[in-house]
Image (cartoon, rainbow, N blue to C red; front, side, top):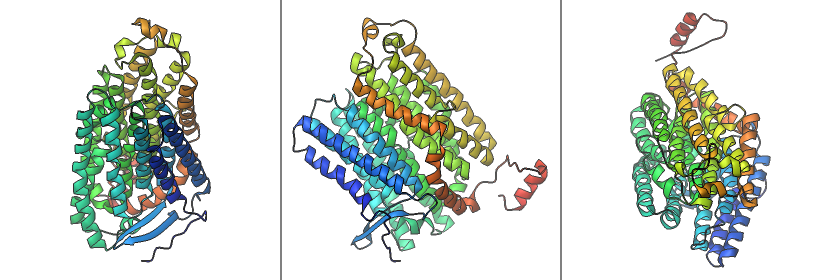
Length: 517
């Protein structure tokens, strides 16, 4: 099939968005520390501006794939870029969080040039994952993202950083080897490396199960699903603040994106057949990691475990295999990217003042840091899913979607929200209220201008998504419909099927007659 590059803007914006941070990263290595910070901030802001232009030029309800660029490299390998609405939203999340991360790293003193370069490379590779339309290009970007992140944790991390970095690296690498083998087989069978073609290719259902499991091995670790989540708390606790923000904000989303882009459309029968595997692991994660979060003494560990529970909501939504579930899963991904990133920044703010993350050392922070306490409260509420914040929209849609697929899963998942409220409110209460438990805690100054600049934009985005989610759902809606149409034939028949104007029993019979399992 001939790929004609169609570009709505008249210049290759996607390649440009990858080129700017790449060039800036190389420049950072050859200038002094002060200049490196400025270059990195400038490059990420320029990418954010291009991202806004991309969103503004994106035609909602237009062609599925827009801004396509295609250049053959060698053999079957090609520089093929293009985005749909789902990729657009994740790209926006990435370019929005990146300048905030650079600004959060302003206080880094050790090897600043290399640090900034590593962050810019992370940005290039993350964006590359969402833009790639060639399966091997996707694989290279997906895997190479490990390297700068490994360095960020291993060089600028906490006391136990080497252990955390190795664990992160080995876990993520192991799953990916299986995925590569599956990709080679798929390309051989389908005769194309072009992702949009593979998404509509019908693989043999017998092979699908093996392919699904191979991809699952990689995405489940990235996402992190229980029981392969154990690298995440270690990585978060050891990573510098900005490292945690980008890890929670965007890198965990690569797994969810992989499920939407590969597992569901390419292996619909296997996705349905292994519905219980995904739901079982997700439900254990929702309940178990929430209980683990309840007893944490370290702020970062608590938020890291809450990330595992929230990402389990994503998998529950995606594998509900219906419109509400998948849209909900996507919104939870975007919301979690903003909220957990912001929570890690909040931990970073007090850590910079007291150099401890132990919850017991704080208390009464609202007295001397009222602005900080207000931001922290907003993000705590968004994490719980308070209506009017971004967290509510996604979780509500996921629960509606999964209720149609299986009411028991919905029931257990709801307990996760209750547990989520308990550990987040406990955290906020212990830090912000009461009397200061140490002298230093009582003397901490409120937010600086730089810290306002970090937290205010995220707070605005969280409220915007909560009050008017349509602006985030509109670009994705048509792509989700296309995906649902593709996987409908295999979707699990729900046990809670409700139809308007029909008696429940008659409706259920009619539904099973239509071809329920």
